[in-house]
Length: 265
Image (cartoon, rainbow, N blue to C red; front, side, top):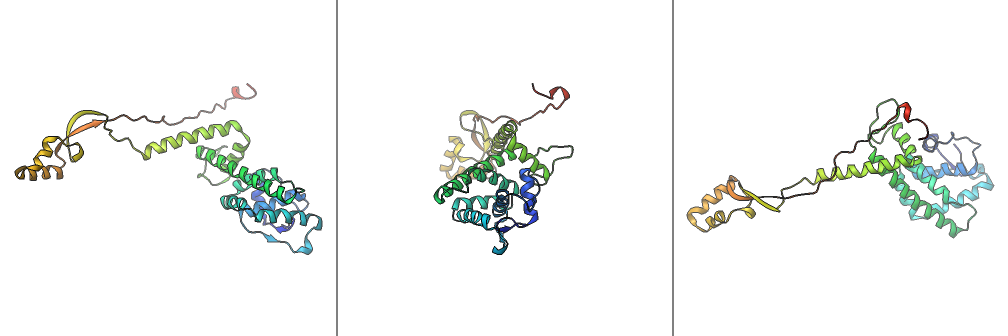
């Protein structure tokens, strides 16, 4: 569909409008909304197809061209586009932050600063929403079962709710932090420390072998016996135990959706 100076595929228009909860694209859309469709296509797909100059509106084309040329010159926008490529929800969120900053009638240097600031805010918003979505990875809304993480309409609906609901966003961030603690504990398993000597055991750890076992290495008649015990993990050695502070257990979130919870509290 023709926008201001670029032709945007209908599928991209659908993804953009659905992710932001906007009406379907129409040829009579205002210039600002049409420009948002074009910038979304730059973020989501990376390439845009120009409309022949004879088919452009002279009054709006120069204004949109100026913004597009400024965007192309900014490394911050290139990094943002790389982060949003193929992710319609992130690209739509970036459009929200960018368009809050852009004032079309600004001077060139002011416009550059505005777009650069918008790119920074968009990157921060995307990082926050990804962290929140990670915390609620297996949560679904509606009557059906949740689909695979990161696919389908449920994650898109969840992303929109996280964007608009501050309380749900805080819950998701807390859940994500607990999951990282649990994941870190799984990766770094508790090992026996060396805080307290508690017993003598058999093993093959030369750093904990008893002096008697080490002394046998100095005599030719007992050295082979010590080597055999090492190979069989039968040397006498000290057993130490240590203490490690563990993270909290799994996080359980209970949502009361009964009739008594409806309405203001």
